[in-house]
Picture 1 (tube, rainbow, N blue to C red):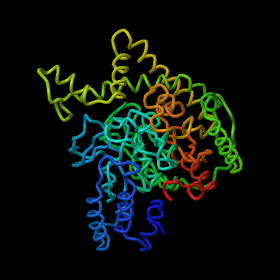
Picture 2: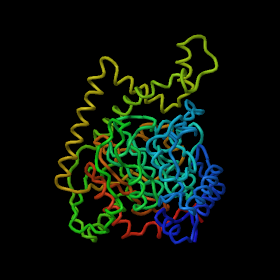
Picture 3: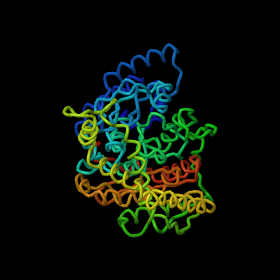
Picture 4: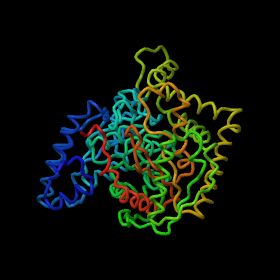
Length: 489
């Protein structure tokens, strides 16, 4: 038995039967990190020593009956834009290189309440702006399926760590596909919950009306377990929904007979790689064999959802990042003559090129004379996108699309071409614009052996339906049993 290849629900069974201890599990992951992290480069901050001490302490308390939480002692990795008290939270930026958070994000507190063990903070594109994890100030994370490929982004560190078995599961954040796209590139499961289902308190904001925290896991059942922990109302987040908490694992019925799935033809058009299309067509056939009703329809939003997303995201980023000024808790330039120079030089030296690009674009669309033409118009189009989805969900329970137009691309191939990088988000951004839930699950591999992701989109707060549809497909094709990253051998 290789501990690190087990899913979390399998680990829980082994703990219950006393085949494994918490210290066994933690030690196995620490050994794996020590062995493989140099190749993958998934962590910004490793907490292996602290994790081992914590594991020994929790194991002792479990044996004495002082801790009874089912998930006690299960390790996890955390994307480095979620505040963790007493631990660096850098957002992979020079601007926050030495920032130690004085409080925990709500999702982190929920994980601590379950006595889970934080193995470390995971690499990302700086301030979550990017689709390849090449825009990190610290390092470039590699894809465990092929170390010459990107893991996707911005939650590339989280997806790569799960795929490489450095952590059993991880938390990421998704503003325009930042959980789903890296999950697709790394052959793992990535869930972006409905906007408002999971608290954003303590998540360093990129675009507040689009950001959402979610799980990246080895399989769908683990995604449901982690969603159980992090979902729920939080009075510290004014956008948090006061919905009754649900046990999402009970939704995994492995039965979708009669369920209606819509396939929007616009998401299979120009720009989508041929192998991706063919693999998705096979997945659609599998769903038909499983008893689902499949229908092609028109969802004519893809052509303008991307532009809408980038206008809104950049506008909100320019506003949110205004607080990083070199005065309070961020990087400050060592040489300056006056206050204006502190602001100018600190921000020029502290932010990377992609962050600067988005701040400039966002400031432009919010400026006098351009606000109505760009930002206001984008908000109006956002309403159109929401309405089109609303109409679609009157007919279909789930919408099926590719997660990304291609498989993982080579390191360095798009990092100097922002437009090509932005176009890689074409399949995912409309979900954030509309505030809907969406999951990416692996559905096959291409000729080079790189994973291909399928995106399932659900109606607002219909995560149960989404998880069951994903789970049923996963059970049918058994992706994890049939395909493994070359890296694992």
